[in-house]
Image: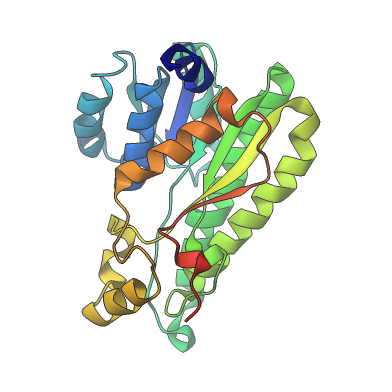
Length: 259
Protein backbone atom coordinates (compact mmCIF):
# COMPACT_ATOMS: atom_id res chain seq x y z
CA UNK A 1 0.00 0.00 0.00
CA UNK A 2 2.77 2.46 0.90
CA UNK A 3 4.50 2.03 -2.48
CA UNK A 4 1.20 2.63 -4.24
CA UNK A 5 0.60 5.85 -2.31
CA UNK A 6 4.17 6.99 -2.81
CA UNK A 7 3.86 6.60 -6.56
CA UNK A 8 0.45 8.26 -6.66
CA UNK A 9 1.53 11.38 -4.77
CA UNK A 10 5.20 11.42 -5.73
CA UNK A 11 6.66 14.59 -7.22
CA UNK A 12 10.12 13.12 -7.82
CA UNK A 13 11.74 14.75 -10.84
CA UNK A 14 9.29 17.67 -10.76
CA UNK A 15 10.00 21.37 -10.25
CA UNK A 16 7.51 23.57 -8.39
CA UNK A 17 7.58 27.37 -8.42
CA UNK A 18 5.86 28.76 -5.33
CA UNK A 19 5.10 32.48 -5.62
CA UNK A 20 4.57 33.82 -2.12
CA UNK A 21 6.56 30.90 -0.74
CA UNK A 22 8.28 33.04 1.88
CA UNK A 23 4.93 33.54 3.64
CA UNK A 24 3.38 31.24 6.23
CA UNK A 25 0.72 29.42 4.21
CA UNK A 26 2.56 29.06 0.91
CA UNK A 27 5.72 28.27 2.83
CA UNK A 28 4.00 25.27 4.39
CA UNK A 29 2.69 24.27 0.96
CA UNK A 30 6.24 24.50 -0.37
CA UNK A 31 7.48 22.19 2.39
CA UNK A 32 4.82 19.66 1.41
CA UNK A 33 5.87 19.79 -2.24
CA UNK A 34 9.52 19.28 -1.27
CA UNK A 35 8.55 16.44 1.05
CA UNK A 36 6.91 14.69 -1.92
CA UNK A 37 10.17 14.98 -3.86
CA UNK A 38 9.84 18.21 -5.86
CA UNK A 39 12.60 20.73 -6.34
CA UNK A 40 10.96 23.87 -4.99
CA UNK A 41 11.69 27.43 -6.07
CA UNK A 42 10.59 29.89 -3.40
CA UNK A 43 9.64 33.21 -4.97
CA UNK A 44 9.31 36.35 -2.88
CA UNK A 45 10.92 39.63 -1.91
CA UNK A 46 12.61 38.74 1.37
CA UNK A 47 15.75 36.65 1.19
CA UNK A 48 15.84 36.66 5.01
CA UNK A 49 12.40 35.02 5.24
CA UNK A 50 13.36 32.60 2.48
CA UNK A 51 16.51 31.47 4.32
CA UNK A 52 14.54 30.14 7.28
CA UNK A 53 12.09 28.33 5.02
CA UNK A 54 14.83 26.89 2.79
CA UNK A 55 16.48 25.38 5.84
CA UNK A 56 13.33 23.31 6.32
CA UNK A 57 12.97 22.52 2.61
CA UNK A 58 16.52 21.24 2.39
CA UNK A 59 15.68 18.47 4.83
CA UNK A 60 13.54 17.06 2.02
CA UNK A 61 15.21 18.32 -1.15
CA UNK A 62 18.68 19.83 -1.11
CA UNK A 63 18.32 21.58 -4.46
CA UNK A 64 15.41 23.87 -3.53
CA UNK A 65 16.31 27.55 -3.79
CA UNK A 66 15.08 31.15 -3.58
CA UNK A 67 14.42 33.57 -6.43
CA UNK A 68 13.74 37.23 -5.73
CA UNK A 69 10.98 38.66 -7.89
CA UNK A 70 8.53 41.54 -7.83
CA UNK A 71 5.73 39.67 -9.59
CA UNK A 72 3.93 42.91 -10.39
CA UNK A 73 6.77 43.80 -12.78
CA UNK A 74 6.38 42.32 -16.29
CA UNK A 75 10.10 42.11 -17.01
CA UNK A 76 10.83 40.43 -13.68
CA UNK A 77 8.13 37.81 -14.30
CA UNK A 78 9.66 36.89 -17.64
CA UNK A 79 13.16 36.82 -16.15
CA UNK A 80 11.92 34.62 -13.30
CA UNK A 81 10.83 31.88 -15.68
CA UNK A 82 14.07 32.19 -17.65
CA UNK A 83 16.20 31.90 -14.48
CA UNK A 84 14.27 28.89 -13.22
CA UNK A 85 14.54 27.11 -16.58
CA UNK A 86 18.27 27.81 -16.64
CA UNK A 87 18.77 26.38 -13.13
CA UNK A 88 16.19 23.61 -13.04
CA UNK A 89 15.55 22.83 -16.71
CA UNK A 90 11.78 22.71 -16.34
CA UNK A 91 8.71 23.81 -14.40
CA UNK A 92 5.87 21.39 -13.69
CA UNK A 93 3.88 23.06 -10.92
CA UNK A 94 3.05 26.71 -10.28
CA UNK A 95 1.59 27.93 -7.00
CA UNK A 96 0.27 31.50 -7.09
CA UNK A 97 -0.02 32.66 -3.50
CA UNK A 98 1.04 36.30 -3.25
CA UNK A 99 -1.63 38.45 -1.61
CA UNK A 100 -2.45 41.36 0.66
CA UNK A 101 -5.51 42.19 2.75
CA UNK A 102 -7.09 45.42 4.01
CA UNK A 103 -9.88 46.16 6.54
CA UNK A 104 -10.56 49.68 5.20
CA UNK A 105 -14.28 50.60 5.45
CA UNK A 106 -15.92 50.66 2.03
CA UNK A 107 -16.52 54.43 1.78
CA UNK A 108 -12.90 55.09 2.78
CA UNK A 109 -11.22 52.89 0.18
CA UNK A 110 -9.11 55.11 -2.02
CA UNK A 111 -8.45 54.48 -5.68
CA UNK A 112 -4.79 54.09 -4.80
CA UNK A 113 -5.53 51.32 -2.30
CA UNK A 114 -7.89 49.59 -4.70
CA UNK A 115 -5.29 49.66 -7.47
CA UNK A 116 -2.57 48.33 -5.15
CA UNK A 117 -4.64 45.35 -4.01
CA UNK A 118 -5.88 44.64 -7.53
CA UNK A 119 -2.29 44.70 -8.77
CA UNK A 120 -0.98 42.26 -6.15
CA UNK A 121 -3.91 39.91 -5.67
CA UNK A 122 -5.22 39.64 -9.20
CA UNK A 123 -3.26 41.34 -11.96
CA UNK A 124 0.09 39.84 -10.98
CA UNK A 125 -1.49 36.37 -10.63
CA UNK A 126 -3.22 36.82 -14.01
CA UNK A 127 0.11 37.75 -15.58
CA UNK A 128 1.99 34.84 -13.95
CA UNK A 129 -0.63 32.47 -15.37
CA UNK A 130 0.10 33.99 -18.78
CA UNK A 131 3.87 33.60 -18.49
CA UNK A 132 3.93 30.09 -17.03
CA UNK A 133 0.79 28.94 -18.84
CA UNK A 134 2.35 29.80 -22.19
CA UNK A 135 5.41 27.79 -21.18
CA UNK A 136 3.24 24.80 -20.25
CA UNK A 137 1.31 25.02 -23.53
CA UNK A 138 4.45 25.30 -25.67
CA UNK A 139 6.26 22.52 -23.79
CA UNK A 140 3.33 20.19 -24.42
CA UNK A 141 3.81 18.03 -21.32
CA UNK A 142 0.99 19.34 -19.17
CA UNK A 143 1.34 21.02 -15.79
CA UNK A 144 -0.50 22.01 -12.66
CA UNK A 145 -1.37 25.55 -11.61
CA UNK A 146 -2.64 26.03 -8.07
CA UNK A 147 -4.06 29.48 -7.42
CA UNK A 148 -4.58 30.32 -3.78
CA UNK A 149 -8.07 31.70 -3.37
CA UNK A 150 -10.01 32.68 -0.27
CA UNK A 151 -13.18 31.83 1.56
CA UNK A 152 -14.18 35.43 0.79
CA UNK A 153 -14.13 34.46 -2.89
CA UNK A 154 -16.82 31.85 -2.17
CA UNK A 155 -18.90 33.49 0.57
CA UNK A 156 -18.85 37.30 0.93
CA UNK A 157 -17.21 38.53 4.12
CA UNK A 158 -17.61 41.87 5.83
CA UNK A 159 -14.77 44.40 6.19
CA UNK A 160 -12.51 43.03 3.44
CA UNK A 161 -14.11 44.45 0.31
CA UNK A 162 -11.06 44.79 -1.90
CA UNK A 163 -9.60 41.44 -0.85
CA UNK A 164 -12.91 39.63 -1.42
CA UNK A 165 -13.40 41.14 -4.87
CA UNK A 166 -9.89 40.27 -6.04
CA UNK A 167 -10.07 36.72 -4.72
CA UNK A 168 -13.45 36.17 -6.40
CA UNK A 169 -11.72 37.21 -9.63
CA UNK A 170 -8.99 34.63 -8.98
CA UNK A 171 -11.62 31.90 -8.57
CA UNK A 172 -13.29 32.88 -11.84
CA UNK A 173 -10.03 33.12 -13.76
CA UNK A 174 -8.97 29.68 -12.55
CA UNK A 175 -12.15 28.08 -13.90
CA UNK A 176 -11.79 29.84 -17.24
CA UNK A 177 -8.17 28.73 -17.63
CA UNK A 178 -9.09 25.19 -16.59
CA UNK A 179 -11.58 25.09 -19.47
CA UNK A 180 -9.11 26.64 -21.89
CA UNK A 181 -6.23 24.24 -21.25
CA UNK A 182 -7.96 21.03 -20.17
CA UNK A 183 -7.27 19.12 -23.41
CA UNK A 184 -3.56 19.92 -23.04
CA UNK A 185 -3.42 18.30 -19.60
CA UNK A 186 -2.77 21.63 -17.91
CA UNK A 187 -4.83 21.60 -14.74
CA UNK A 188 -5.82 24.84 -13.02
CA UNK A 189 -7.42 24.70 -9.58
CA UNK A 190 -8.12 27.01 -6.67
CA UNK A 191 -7.00 26.03 -3.19
CA UNK A 192 -9.30 27.81 -0.76
CA UNK A 193 -8.07 28.21 2.81
CA UNK A 194 -10.63 28.92 5.49
CA UNK A 195 -9.42 30.95 8.42
CA UNK A 196 -5.72 30.65 9.08
CA UNK A 197 -4.02 33.33 11.22
CA UNK A 198 -1.50 34.30 8.53
CA UNK A 199 0.42 37.57 8.28
CA UNK A 200 -1.99 39.27 5.90
CA UNK A 201 -5.10 38.86 8.06
CA UNK A 202 -3.84 39.18 11.63
CA UNK A 203 -4.61 42.89 11.64
CA UNK A 204 -8.31 42.21 11.05
CA UNK A 205 -8.56 39.43 13.66
CA UNK A 206 -9.96 41.45 16.55
CA UNK A 207 -11.44 39.49 19.51
CA UNK A 208 -14.92 40.21 18.17
CA UNK A 209 -13.94 39.00 14.71
CA UNK A 210 -12.41 35.80 16.11
CA UNK A 211 -15.62 35.09 18.04
CA UNK A 212 -17.67 35.54 14.87
CA UNK A 213 -15.40 33.22 12.90
CA UNK A 214 -15.46 30.51 15.55
CA UNK A 215 -19.26 30.75 15.66
CA UNK A 216 -19.32 29.98 11.95
CA UNK A 217 -16.69 27.21 11.95
CA UNK A 218 -17.92 23.74 12.93
CA UNK A 219 -14.43 22.68 14.05
CA UNK A 220 -14.28 25.71 16.38
CA UNK A 221 -10.65 26.50 15.62
CA UNK A 222 -8.33 28.14 13.11
CA UNK A 223 -6.52 26.06 10.54
CA UNK A 224 -2.82 25.33 10.83
CA UNK A 225 -0.60 25.99 7.83
CA UNK A 226 0.48 22.34 7.60
CA UNK A 227 -3.17 21.39 7.03
CA UNK A 228 -2.95 22.84 3.51
CA UNK A 229 -0.34 20.28 2.48
CA UNK A 230 -2.72 17.39 1.75
CA UNK A 231 -4.83 19.39 -0.69
CA UNK A 232 -1.69 20.85 -2.27
CA UNK A 233 -0.23 17.42 -2.99
CA UNK A 234 -3.55 16.18 -4.37
CA UNK A 235 -3.69 19.06 -6.85
CA UNK A 236 0.00 18.94 -7.76
CA UNK A 237 0.42 15.19 -8.25
CA UNK A 238 -0.98 12.43 -10.44
CA UNK A 239 -3.40 11.66 -7.62
CA UNK A 240 -5.40 14.64 -8.90
CA UNK A 241 -4.98 13.96 -12.60
CA UNK A 242 -8.72 14.37 -13.34
CA UNK A 243 -9.22 17.41 -11.11
CA UNK A 244 -9.34 20.77 -12.87
CA UNK A 245 -11.47 23.86 -12.47
CA UNK A 246 -12.14 22.87 -8.86
CA UNK A 247 -12.28 24.91 -5.69
CA UNK A 248 -10.78 22.75 -2.94
CA UNK A 249 -11.96 24.11 0.40
CA UNK A 250 -9.78 23.57 3.47
CA UNK A 251 -11.95 25.39 5.97
CA UNK A 252 -12.94 23.29 8.97
CA UNK A 253 -16.49 23.21 7.64
CA UNK A 254 -16.93 27.00 7.41
CA UNK A 255 -18.65 26.90 4.01
CA UNK A 256 -21.08 24.22 5.23
CA UNK A 257 -22.32 26.40 8.12
CA UNK A 258 -25.34 28.68 8.05
CA UNK A 259 -26.82 29.36 11.51
